[in-house]
Image 1 (tube, rainbow, N blue to C red):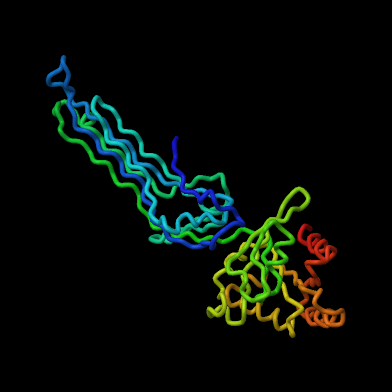
Image 2 (image 1 turned 135 degrees about the vertical axis):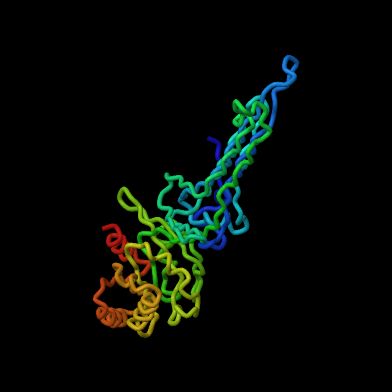
Length: 339
């Protein structure tokens, strides 16, 4: 069956992107069924033949399917009304109208689809399932269907019914194995860039990362997805800084890498600040496995590093001092992540 697809622009890739769109509301409308035809057989041999109006075709359905592209919702930023094709009306000589073309909407894996009217939700978790979300209308019957022993010349035909129309809220929650968290300028983006094929913007000032970045780290026979989440500050849950708008993207991660820079005067306070903001957003995040990375250790001497490691030991978590310029440090981290 021929289908029309709504997909991301071919010019984008995971890492060559404009602003990430992670929420959008769209309206979908399946196709109306084609009208039945009122027609009577007329030709050179038959001046007053019987009814021969055909049935209308069913309207096109709308399906939704996952794609492995976090930019998938960008396509709906300016195209928020999706309609499937209407069924073709019935014809003469009992010809049935053609069914309307189906439309498939393709959204990123990890998208939560909510029916705004009913609250019903579904999550898009794979690329193989094509899920029906709006059913096309039924084609109307032509007058041939209405003939009977008592009515040989029916002049009645049905109109096609309307297709389903729904308002859908699409919300992307990145599917990543590991999430990087920490205060601004903690070295998260730099670390992501050396561990993966991602190319986030990097600079030595706060809030360089304005949206989540994701990259893939190759292991032995498999790969894991790493997500860099924009930095939190104290009061983020009230909207300060970049707020907590991106924390939903670590809800699906299995492991948190908590990056804390040696540049912090009090590394334990920096740790608590982020943990408190996580708790105010969703206390379940505190239950996730967590590794603390003391970053940028190339900027400090041994005495300072030991002092800060002693402070962080109070967390009871695994702590790894790290410089992105030290291959041994990076190898130790990769070993932990690929266990």
